[in-house]
Length: 556
Image (tube, rainbow, N blue to C red; front, side):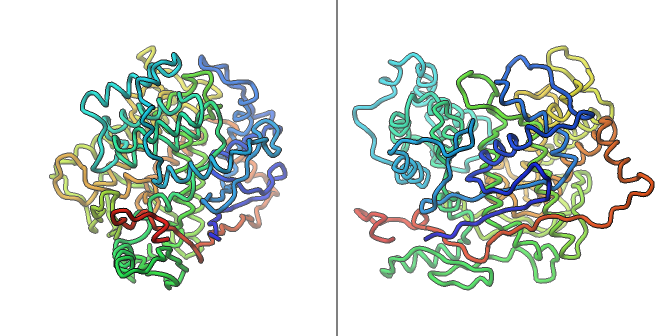
């Protein structure tokens, strides 16, 4: 059977126990609940009820708001799902095994197949017009119908959620899938849109809708590299596998170990660095498939474009602002831990005015088969047509920095500077940087996180009119591979560190504790990060074209 990559880190805190989870969303929910009874009277501040309220049982996020940042390296546990592997399903209120229908294993298998691309044929008796007969699904069905009757959905090219039109089309599909009254209807909608939309757009909308559907289907996506093997296997490997298929070799499963030895087929992990480049020492961390799976699943569970609390029936909505910082701070902390263990300095922040680019090349293909361009070493040219994007990011960074330094934020409602609201400071700051609808002023502060990743994506490229070349920051499955991305995360974390050390008294008291006369810190114990990247099995059937009348069973 398929081995499953596991990322686990743990630091000993009495109220937190070790356990494994099927996806980041499940981990965050149970981690939030495990800390719910933990109290620090001096630091606990109950946030006033926002206009879009959540059930009382879901407000436990405030109880660990400060601790999630102050402790630093807390805990990350995740187990990647796969079509062969089982998933632990638990009731969200009790934590015990959930009572699921006997059809659930079949539904889960169908969900896996739909994401991988094995979608049923379109039901001839099913149509958008038929969906409009139900009042609850009328508006999202009309929105999809309007696109289909107009220019239609984008079917080819680079799928980029930073593109306004593509994001709008994706959210239109997401709204329709979220309004589906049951799983059977949702499957019919996917089959109906299969040949009418971009494959990546449909899969993204489907996975996100299943995460947040009010019916709580309790299904987790499979290993994302089985859905998109082209984002982990080099193009040279896929070409070799295709040659093997044409010669009649039916086994299209690739086994890889840490020594890059091939057991079946060929896998030539492309070295993006020279042998003398010190950053090559950390490829085992950045290229780990489980970290990339976790990164994508987190952003699927907390998409910045999704409006929190828009529908009272939608799934419980966790605090994006706090969790955005918590999750990405963990990535930077773990990365720095690996750097130190390899006798390297912790990562420095990215200076937009003096960007020092390292050479980085990926032998990967986009979904349409176009090569993903790399980046040359050196400094980007200010004469390039895309340089204004760099200037825009610097402007956003300056505005966020001013808010952090002054403790004043521009309010979209009052159109004036106001202090951060006591008890919600990190909530506001996180949403401001991520660029959600909960941001104090989405237009003024924008989305520093995504605008900056877009800018980094085009570093080192020549003049390009619309930036529609494939890029490894367009795809969250390849984002973590690039060392420069962790420099960007360091920029983001520095905003939070600066604010907490300046304005939040509870953080100052924690710092003072270590300066107490007679108290010394002899050692720090941090749990090990186990990646299990030494053995990986990936089904690459979807990366190999089928001949006419040939089925996947013919080549498996």
